[in-house]
Image (cartoon, rainbow, N blue to C red; front, side, top):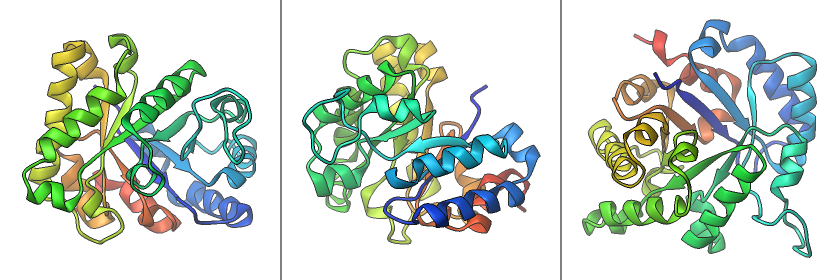
Length: 257
């Protein structure tokens, strides 16, 4: 049984004071029964990571610390970059890799994403590898080809046992921050496609173990239906993760009417 993973991607929001306040609020509003049934990660900006780590560990808050990105090299002359080794020293557990904003705005390629996936794994962290199509690609009927290409390229060269421990996030680009959400049927169809692709390449055990998140305007009012789908094992939450109450409501989707 795959334990769902709800991840809050704060993007370029919240300074370290705001971040401390938010995780402290989350410790009060997220029910302990929810974190027993659902794993929860928060992904602050780099400048907040040490502050959030300190609060989580000092107050024993049962949230996993995550990062939003990293470079694939351990160290070197890469001005402005952050290495996976640095993140591992902060007890980061999850790293988002290949988010559509990184691909679309900063030109990350499938090969870059694959390098980052391998680097995150090398330092005993878990990559949340993102994939997804633009609105133009969806309207042109190219969703399947785009997602298959990204999944196959991102996981290239990995062992099946490693893939089974990973997280893949399907995030249709046209649904990120727009208020539009893929229909439950569409989200399940693509997440199912991802799982079948992994089964074909890495075998049934890898496909059964890998967790597949849906990301794209996830909110409290659609979380339960999305999470009820057989191939959706969690959510990569953007804007709704910036406020404690809205994020806690998504984490507590099991109790929604």
